[in-house]
Length: 236
Image 1 (cartoon, rainbow, N blue to C red):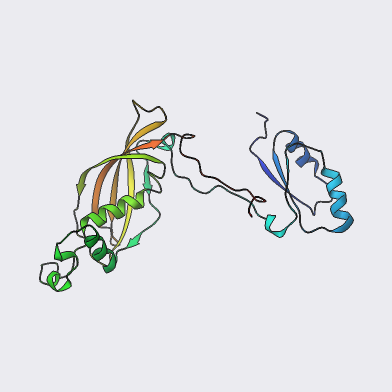
Image 2: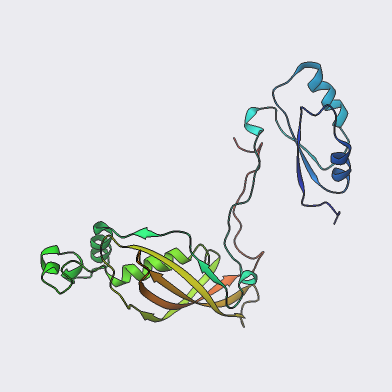
């Protein structure tokens, strides 16, 4: 592999000539993306003649304003190699639970307990208001953890030790974090690793409302299904 492979340089037309440093990096394997503005008479033509044939690593783009952009890969989640025992991931998103969330989830799952959807009934309990369906809380906090834990999941192996130390009420905002407890190779699939984590969900007051352990099978880097990505100039 050439020493500068993987480096991307944006070469703008305003440069009077190709800088010698850019030329040298291109010859060492850097990918130089020449970004053109609309044609500027002799200057544009002269620039084309100056750089043409300098390096096979130049990528020629159409002359349009749409090409004046840089492409960066977004977050793709962790692969098996990225997990370290003892690491704690504070998941970025919180979620305020609404009455609609509670009623719909309860009824969609054919749960007939009125404490989740009958406000008159719930007002007569010691809570004085509806409890949020605990399976909704489990699903929500599991979902919050996916961005850091299981975006590259092969399969979910199970939940263990689910605990609900505090109730969740409509209007509460739930946040969460996850600690990596264990990781090991899969005995049957060399492209997969197995990770066990403990996830904790808590409300806006910092009170823990749920904890659980979860074990997942996670792809190793380079083995996850591929998604088509478009580069500048390929968008139509």
